[in-house]
Length: 368
Image (tube, rainbow, N blue to C red; front, side, top):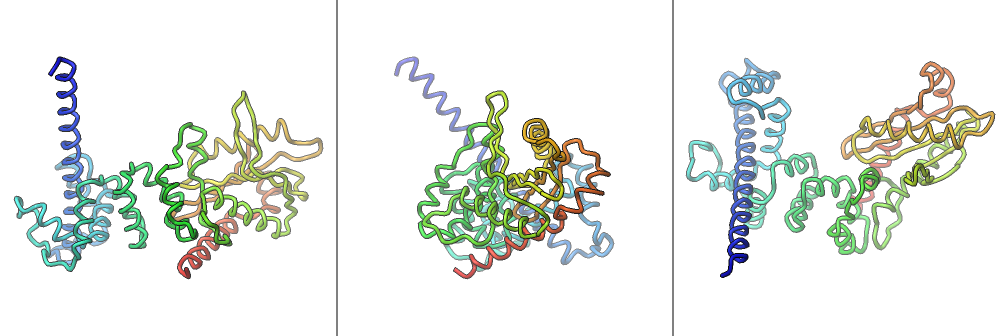
């Protein structure tokens, strides 16, 4: 062994020890949070003085634990712990085995829960290899089959939390259900469609679950987005409020940077452009800032003489809800309400459109 090999060997030992230490900490955190959820549920069902706290149990518990133990026990976290236990209550025997050296931590666990060897092996792998932050994403999935799919794919592909969330938001499970070539969709997922620039970070995950897709050999995220734009465009034009198609994926170039507006319509009654941006995920202030940037550009570069200032619609859809916002680009709000809003679809109409499309797609998938 020479000196370089000595340095290399010590470096390997150190990194390996770090990896196992982090893994052990992650497993401990996961077990702790499951056990906290278990105790909360047990108390809610059988606590001798539970009626004293009722609906305010978690609020009071959060205050007392924070005072006694410090950070990490917010009411939100306690709700997550409880949901975690309820989602993975079948883990009782697995957790009990992991706590064999500390039986006082889990005295009431049922070690005879009906769990198959395959389920037990998957549970042990999840417990040892998946972090608590992964579980926060997984427990938000209500459908057990869908959740199991993402559990297995996370283990197989060693997805980071960010990648897991991206794959859920990109509807990988639904795309496989819509595709005949399921292995090819999985192969695309393994490649990750990696985000490499901030611009791609803005656009890459914005794929919605919408109706009317003919079965393709492979259904990609871009095809789903395209289908949504088709339906949204038709929906607005058919409302009879004077909408005309102007552009799809309109490119805006400023200082050699390219930006893309998803859908541009012209409203003949209002004599103005209507810019529409589709987002997957929760609405953020950055979304509003991006749309106002587009509106300022359209006002300066696209608005013709005699036209009124453009208006923007931001449509955000996450797994659980839909959010619609109008962007005014500096327009007086009173003017918008008194003049523009009369000729535009309401937020409620747009949200109902999205929810309806989601429901029909789910029915299509369930019928397969």
